[in-house]
Length: 78
Image (cartoon, rainbow, N blue to C red; front, side, top):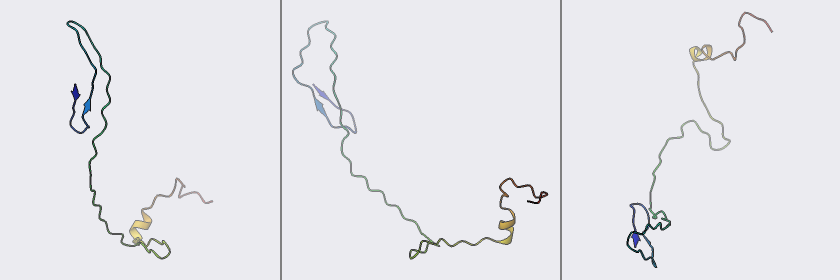
């Protein structure tokens, strides 16, 4: 008997006999078929200095004023 499923290697089960009105369970294992998949990833790494790993970024005055205050009350002096 040959067991086949798409994406798996075929498995051949031998030495099996079945009598009339007999229930038979045959364990088998399917191994994943090998596939060659090529993934091409492209991206730009703008702002990364490869000499010393410094990341450059610029923020405007509006962006700075909209940063969260880490739950500090603005009316309380520390």
